[in-house]
Image (cartoon, rainbow, N blue to C red; front, side, top):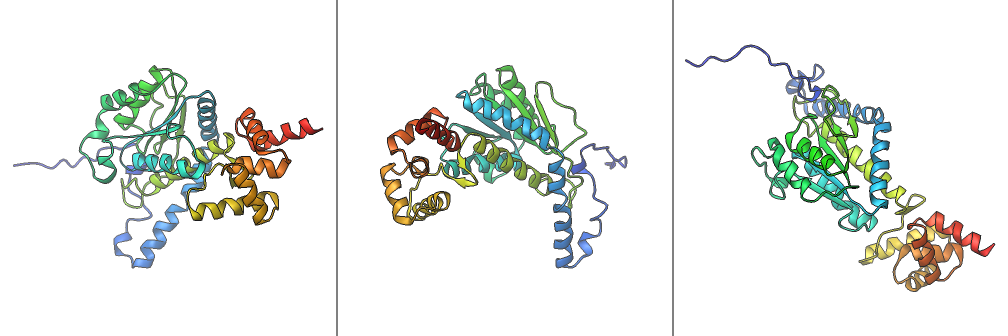
Length: 309
């Protein structure tokens, strides 16, 4: 006869523990359940706020990598991997970044984006193989795992470190030890989930906030914005052409016709058109000044002002 163990196994990850505030959730009306989930979700931004210094260190490492011609890699499994793939994909249309600037590695590959693939997140060797094959010295690798111990992610980070890349780990488990070779540990304490172990909830929300903040800040530091405007986008359809004209108008005060003419002279390059309208230099000079300043509009404007003084 099979016996069922009665001893409770201690789990040190907060995300796996039962939440004392939600033990009666299955007895509540619909609005009450939603209110309780929302109440727990409101704890997440404060938890992220506590790790902003570590996140800043990760951003600086990523910026250093990109400025020196290297790449940023995301590594995750399950929810973490799906969020990483989404963030990397959205940077291309938003900031017109080269496709190889941000590379996402998801345990189980494309198939695992839609379907759970058994045991892939437990394969440390697979993670190590995947990163060892593509990471170069000078790259930056950001791993994401709610438990802080996902073998695929840790194997990948270890291999990347061995290849001379800088690494960081986003973890939902402050109790987990810093893995060997990880330069920056970003351990977010979002506490027990509404449903014990369902890390697509608060832990996943924290990872989404961190990824968005990380990549957006990296893009700002890389000169892909001017003020709070997206000026690196390319107008590939009617909607984006209209947005481009609005951005030029908001940034310069020029009317729609002036913006349209400037954009045409710049060959559709929003940054070049912006430089032309703000500094008065022609499109060719604007393009050259932007290139000399790493694509940073404000730095290029200072160059233009110095040249004209």
